[in-house]
Amino acid sequence: MMSDLHIEHRWFWAWQDEQEEKWLEEMSERGFHLVKPGFFGRYEFRKGAPNRYVYRLDFLTNSQQKKDYLQLFADAGWEYVGEFGSWQYFRRPAGEQENGEIFTDVTSKIAKYQRVMFFLLILTPVYLMPIQFKGILEGRYHWVMLAFYFVWFMALCMEIFAMIKLIQRINQLKNTLKQ
Amino acid sequence: MMTIKQISKHLPLSEATFFIMLALVTPKHGYGVMQMVEGISKGAVTIGPGTLYGAFANLEKEKLIEMVREEGRRKEYQLTQDGRSLLEAQLERLRMMVDLGDEAINSDKDRA
Image (cartoon, rainbow over the protein chains, first blue to last red):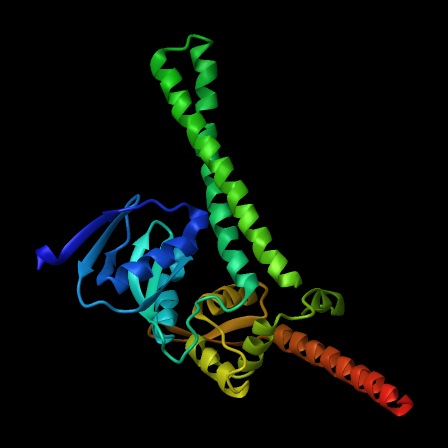
């Protein structure tokens, strides 16, 4: 029934995946179960009986192997909820006997954030492209171009910020390895 | 074939990698590996699907395991000759560590 659907808008950054998982778990406890993970922060939920789930997110960049990737998660007892970009959303009922983690060591957790960082690095040349327009314009900056540069600059700042945050997250995890 | 130097580059293996390679002495698909590792370690070691998928990708890239069969959506992998050599090198190192450990602990006992 359409009336069971509930839309919620919420934005999580790439390094806030654990907060996102926790939020989805809290939503399920209130009876809102994720149906479709968000297009830029738009989440579709279905109202049902409250249930305790464990939600986990992975970042998959090698999508040619998606079929056996999803099969492996399914075999291990994880329900595939969907994806947003490269982010893959899984859940399983909480309190099952089996291990409730998709990553069981620190190295593979770090590797996940490294995949996110690599993805951001690939995006960089796209951000650098406007520099080529500079030569074409030869110093005559139209306000449209200025606006364009401004957007580009903001995107670049956000990317650098995201990189710093991800490196911090990786370092946190590396410190747990040393202990 | 890998040289001794190339093999030792991979040593020591992480706990997850060690158990995954141990399971792949005979062909297995991903979930088969997870089950076997949990079984032989009596539940002490569990490997999540995210960790396993990453490990498979790395091991295949390093040509330490190879796909031997495809059954529907499940791919079966097995150790390559290089993978086997690496696993043997790891066992050798572990044996040495156990021997040295025993020796040190026991000599300490004798003194006391």
